[in-house]
Length: 431
Ligand SMILES: [Zn+2]
Image (cartoon, rainbow, N blue to C red; front, side, top):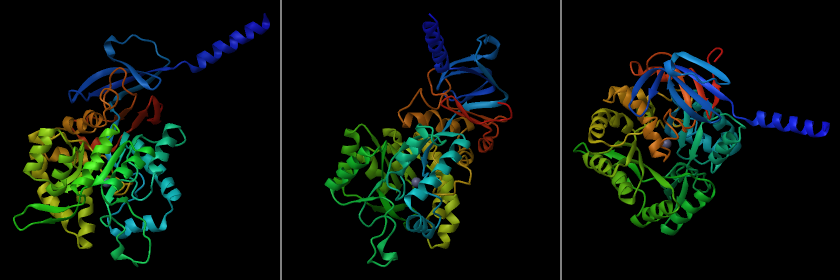
C-alpha cells in the first residue's frame, strides 16, 4: 500500500510539474495588429507557449498562476524583421566585409552571431528572416537550432543559409587580390541551370527555410535619371532556381536594386524583393498586381551612403534622393510592404527599429508601419494567425513599450519588456 501511494504521489507531482502554467498579462494598451489600432485595458492570458485569450480587463474574472502587470505600458505583438544577417557585423566598406571573411573563422563568427540574436530579441524582434550567412556556410542553421533548444536566447529564425549568385559576381572579388589565392565567397557560386538546381537542393537539405539570390549588380543612374543594373543570372539559371525552390515547397527572396533585377525576379516567381532602391513605375505596378512583397531596408541605405561614397560608390546617396517619392508611390499602388532592416549590414549596436521612422515620414501611418512588422511579416512567412498578432492560438510573442507608439514611433527603439514563446526574456522591475 505504501508503495502504491508513493508511486501515485510521484505521478501526481510529475503531472503537476509538467502542467502548463497560466499567466495573465494586464495591458494598459494593446496594439491590435489586424486593425492597426490600440485597445485600452486588456488582459492577455498565456498558457505555455501560446496565447489563450484576450479579454477587456473589465470583463476578466479568470484565476491564473501568475499575473504580469503591464498596465503602465503598451503591449504589441513581437516584431518581425524580414531581413537580417546575424552572421555579419557591418560592412559599410569592402574592407570591413573582407576582414570578416579573411580574419574570422566561422566558429568565431557564430559566437558573434549568438550576440546578434540576443540583441534582436532585446530589441523586440522576436522573429527574423535571416537572409544569408555571408560566407559562414550553414552556421545560421546552428544558431536557429541553439535558440530552439534553449542553448542561447534569440528570436524565431527563418534561415536562408548561403544564398546564390553566379560566378564572379560577388565578394570577395579576385581582381582585388592576388589571383593565385582561392578566396572565400560571401555566397554559393553557380554556373548554369544544373548547378543552380544543385545549390537549391544542397541548401534546403542543410536546413534552408528560404532561398536567397542576388539578381543584379553594378547599379548605375542613366542620363535620363532612370536606374539600371546588370542581371546576374541567365533565364535558364533563374528558372531552375525558381522551379526547384517552389517544387520543394519553399519561397525565394531576391536582392534586386533596379528594374533589370526586379522584373527578372518577378517573372521567375519571386516572393519578396529586397531593397529595390531604384525600382521604377513598371516594377511598382507589377509588384502590386502580383502582390510581390517589398522589403525596402531604408535605414541601411541612408547609413551606408556616406561611407560608400568615400569609397567611390555614390549609389546609396543617389538612391536616398529618390527613395521617399518612390516609397509613397509603392504604398499608394498597394505593394505589400514588409518591415526589414538588413541589420548586420550595419552594426548590431545601432537601432533595429529605425526603419519605422522613415516609413512614417514617407507616408505610412504609425499603425501601418507596425503592421508591416507584424501581420504583413507573418503573411510573408506563411504564419498568419500564429505570428504578428495577439489572439488565441497565436504564439505568445509579446513586447511592451512605455507610451503610445502610434503617437511616437521612436518608442519602438526602446522596447522595455519582451516575451517569446511564453517566456519573459527582458523584464521591467518586478514584471
Ligand atoms: Zn542583406
